[in-house]
Image (cartoon, rainbow, N blue to C red):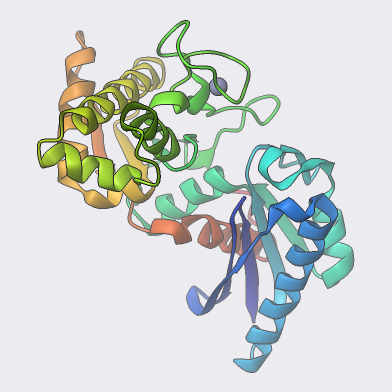
Length: 305
Ligand SMILES: [Zn+2]
């Protein structure tokens, strides 16, 4: 008896088949979101069919599915309220998946699901209260409180990337100025380096390497990013007092060369208290799909945790 799980992102759809805690299969597909919202949904349903077929090839019949999506998500209604990079607006994902697969479907937010997975299988193990903060094309936080992700009244909790850290700063995709995401997301680091040097196509990881090698422009962009992220994490700590913050995304995979200066910058800003433990995530890009599998398994087990 297995579950299938999908993590639908703006560029990739990641899929997993899990049987009693064992991963049977992983897969990923290109989202090709430029084709429009209906085509993306057709692709998602096709990916679900492909995972069912994979499970059966392993001799396992899927009993439930989990699907997680980015953006503003209504977990209760099963609706993608606004997933701008998929073109989805009030899209009833759970209903359509349920009708297509004729299986029970668990639905949730990609980052909150990633937080659930890190909490049960990764760097949050043993901690009932922690934050999971993936730093990627955007920045968001899963706030795990009492072992559960806190979504807020409207499902908007944890939008750390839109915390204003530089009032009047760069224009953000959300319409505000100076949001954390405009300085510290991987895409912002690459964009700012390109704007400063005129050299496009340098990734955030490469900016970090160049900064370490003594490139002063790379160092300036990098330091701005670390300072901005530290302000965001210090604000998160001041309000919620987490003892541990799990940093995800490709930059965190660099480990201490990234996390060391970030730890110092966070500690410097927390004047009246000690800093939280900052650790790298353990599940990498699979956190979301593993979280979706856990949501599906919980549905089967009748657990609402
Ligand atoms: Zn913003």
